[in-house]
Image 1 (cartoon, one colour):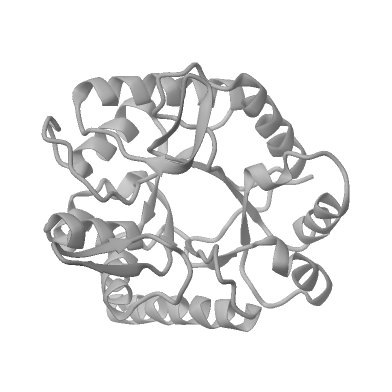
Image 2 (spheres, helix red, strand yellow; image 1 turned 30 degrees about the horizontal axis):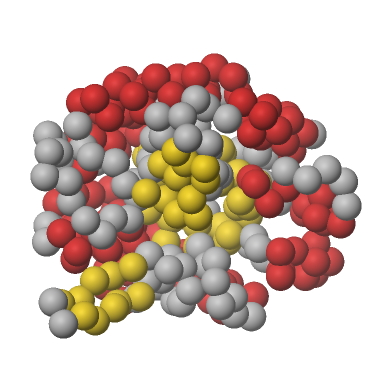
Length: 283
């Protein structure tokens, strides 16, 4: 297959199994689609038939959730080999993973767990990303994680942490604007300042999603749940991101409590309106 590039000012939608047949048969007016790589680790069957059909009409991006880049376990080579097979076949325009860990001593946890922002963690992640990029034969993007606690022994800010990883490994950044806002609320920092400090040249993709507010006697916490519309505050933050990272395409994520596909298209159209507003302001 020939690799279809993803235009800088485009907006894609995260494609989940519930909508794959509709997308393959109806060919809705969407710029591109992103799939979770691990959902296609099985060989053959209807999922690959539908995705192959979609791939003939749309650019694709692969977004991984199971590589556990931050773990001290050895990299899962069978996982990486299957990922490489999928990449070689589908030729996605972008490949991404998370700056988190999810395994220890070979036991996998169903979560994307945070890392301390230390120089040791930077070295560890850079070595792991180098190994992944060498095996896959391409540059990957790494996503900033949502977090619900802070490590007392962190030695730098989150934006310094991700910038240094990108600079030293040569990888790109998948900037999740919802995660920036969630973390800013949970840890009390300025999300606009965070965006301004991120290395613009490294940002290769933007994610948008909904989150949930949980109230406790000790206070509230925001959780990155991907199960509702993007809130007004995140749209406002995205307006800043659209100006700072106009070269990076945007993706709408929705993973649980999936709505009708028309709702996802409406969210994508809202994102496009912010991109148009930014271009008009620049003109």
